[in-house]
Length: 424
Image 1 (cartoon, rainbow, N blue to C red):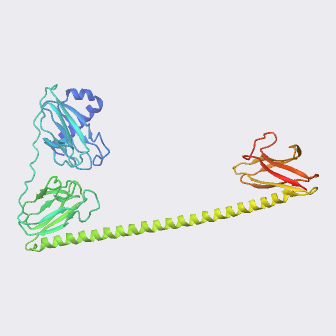
Image 2 (image 1 turned 135 degrees about the vertical axis):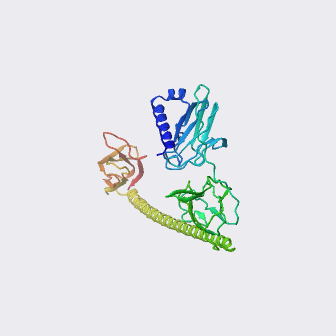
Image 3 (image 1 turned 180 degrees about the vertical axis):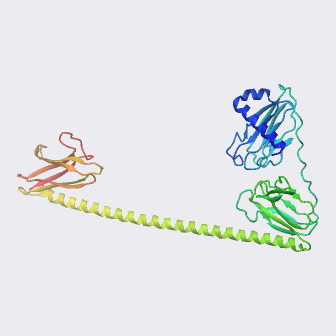
């Protein structure tokens, strides 16, 4: 561990103790502060504490060290995600285990954010209540200058390569061959920011080139390259890997055309596969809709059949009742008359009942009163019969009642049934 790393770790340790032991005292007296990236802050959900702490207060001339202990690369950039950088400071990409210290700050409030993950926001408050002075931070290394390409060797970022799944063609083309002394231009047409960094995700940067963040619509051109093989990757999205091969006489005037033809063929294949998948999904949807219609038609047919059977049974019952009524209405003296009543318990519990038949003569005098009681199970239907034998000719009125029981004369039907009887 070198001296610089020891100093950074010491600052982190001191800040953490001060923050959790006495945060108000720290805010009053500390000239400098350390802010860490919350673990997992490379995906939304850490708000508002994506930086820990999200708000720090220091004195005039103080500095803030941003230490990245998260597994993803981050930046600390003054400004806001909505309005963009303010230009006070910009850490560029800080890899895991790395750190960045701002310049000495004047009094004021400084919002800041991560340019790679703009939902990460924080605030530095600089007050003039502090009189301590600090040493100037070490200057940030100058970025590798962008050079002008000596040939039309261009690599683009695949659309959607900011998420895994584009492998192995996250750079298009993933492998490019050029002549010694030529450069490669990396053009970002994707919506996510990317880097082109010499090296591998496993071994890290090799220092040959590093584009830093390239935003949508921007590009970066390497310095002229000598003969050799140059793997590269995106530091923000390490599943993106590519290869530059530099060989004497290996690039031909038709290479760009060949690369373009390959890209166009890949696009046509992707479009055809998408169309085939859409057609398959449409066929499945049509099949499901047809099956649903068949099932609906079958259900409607079964319902119609059941309704027809029920209607036929009801008509048969009405016809039988009418025939019985006709026989009763034409009764003779001393001929036994059967008076029927059928009823159904539509509830889901057992039901007691009392069937009462009352017969009155033409003077409205009751001459016969008979009944039968019992229990009817849930859903059960009963066809009950009571008999009467008239002894004199005349006109009579027959009334049928259905009650709960004699102790609780609650009617179980909406109205009593009444019909006339003529005895000759």
